[in-house]
Amino acid sequence: MKVSVKKMKSIAFSLGAVVVLSAAQWSHAATAKEGEAAFMKNGCWQCHGTQGQGGIAGLKLAPNPKPLAYLNAFIRNTVGPMPPYSEKILSAEDLANIHAYLESIPAAPDPKTLPLLQVK
Ligand code: HEC
Image (cartoon, rainbow, N blue to C red; front, top):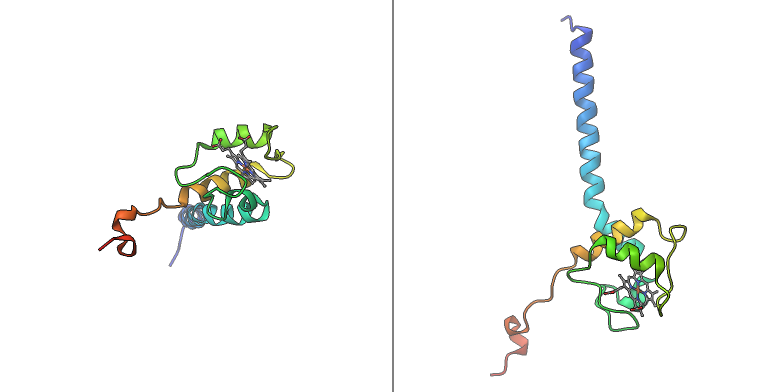
């Protein structure tokens, strides 16, 4: 069978596209997971709780986190009780991953739906 160069180029391009697309999907799926790791590594959990639930020294961050732009503005510049994190310490990518992690945290169930909490 004779395969033309043009055909071979087209096959190679399609294979490349498949690899690039699956890599993109994979890295997208990994962001919340990487964000969780960055949240732990950078000590956010020590004040905000491992689920961003707050109540330790820091505010509640999840569920329904504020937009990434807000996090970016606050975290880089805060002069309050929370230490600021420059980009040298916490990269923009890690911050975006942390935001994805906070977004992935589900809301707590309605207490009325928990059998253990119902008075009989
Ligand atoms: C030493 C404790 C401490 C650590 C560590 C810490 N925070 Fe905070 N954080 C706070 C406190 C306290 C506040 C409230 C401060 C204020 O209002 O000035 C706060 C506020 C915030 C806010 C603003 C919340 C709002 O609703 O306005 C965000 C977002 C935030 N922290 C994210 C993070 C992230 C992400 C990390 C890790 C990279 C982190 N914090 C690490 C203590 C901490």
